[in-house]
Length: 206
Ligand code: HEC
Image (tube, rainbow, N blue to C red; front, side, top):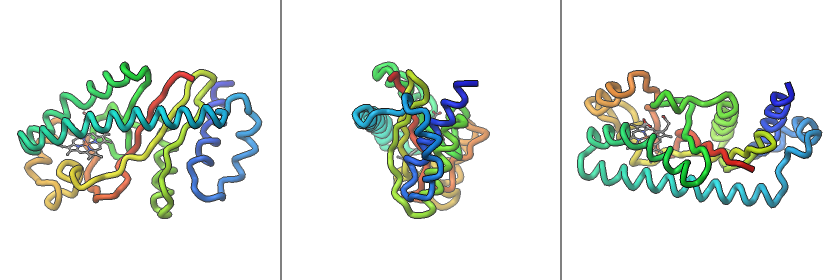
């Protein structure tokens, strides 16, 4: 099917774009054949800017609320708060920006954040680059004629460890019990500061 070819071509272009070394050059000819799908340099720049604005705004809305909830109610209150607020907040910002804003990860807390096949490939590329010590760059790619995706890494900070850290070390066992009550299938723990936690995945109309 045509859309599959298109999606794959986009993905190849994306993977070579995200890699910081040149060893993915073998994918390039395939990407070039579908030239009309590729973004122009101007489009690329404009969508990178738009994506970084949207994710920065969403991140500061989320972390602002998180910080105040932590201060006022400690980890248990903040976990309950995240559970109620994080998803609707991101959803409503999606409407404001006329985009679909998602956070996803190889290890997820909310099952709704499970990566799609395309997101999974990008996440794996980010992790491979992180392992090599390469810098993790945001990127944009045309998904099809009318949709563009923006991806950017989300790194773990000190503040995050109280809920995503190591049990019994940075994450208190009793706090994690609460997390598990709300998210029985949680996988999003064991992180250290600076680790790649996941990524933003924003899609907008071209
Ligand atoms: C008070 C506890 C708490 C803190 C602190 C916290 N998180 Fe989370 N995090 C959560 C909860 C709860 C969810 C699930 C939210 C939902 O249901 O949408 C979540 C979800 C996420 C997700 C979405 C993917 C997934 O696993 O479902 C990312 C990415 C994420 N957190 C990153 C961070 C980062 C980065 C920090 C630090 C800046 C951070 N978190 C700090 C509790 C926390």
